[in-house]
Image (cartoon, rainbow, N blue to C red; front, top):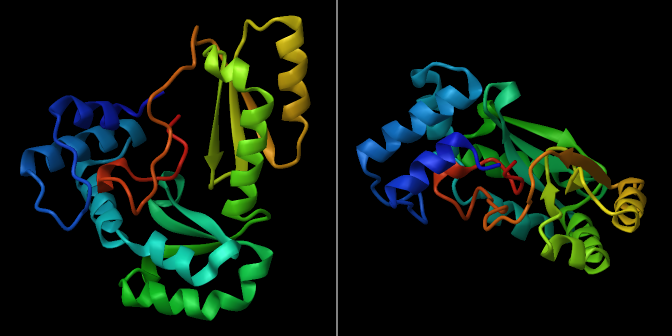
Length: 213
């Protein structure tokens, strides 16, 4: 499901690729209002959180370049006052000082948490690809969708409730994988055109990770 604030912005037809561009104040206000409604916070709090996301623009690519195969994703956590979260996989523990230095350069030290995770972004990507190859027919039929969720540090598989016995068995087997979580939905169809948003590649109000549901 698209976030309400995402739908509101999309309706304007004005989406900016980089936060360095000057955004229409009306669009900024619309984004803040929608964020506030979605997360149950005041508009002033929503505005402050979106400004934090503005400041973080570009850091994802810098972290990915710094950590290479040990990069484990970043996201903003509304349950933690909208703070920036940086996943730290086991192989990246020795790079924490460098990560903190980069955060300081972006003036993000006070607004960021380093979070220990099990899997790297590359490991999740490989799992996502293997699942896509395994149930591509189910996905193509709109009965399921797949996304990488950096916050949960898992690959998410969202499947409709009404599946054939064969499809049900295949989905259930995938749901048993340790780096996968399975969620069922009452939606009649899970075909979507948007399920990837990273903090370096989206307009700030659209930020929060690769999962859009």
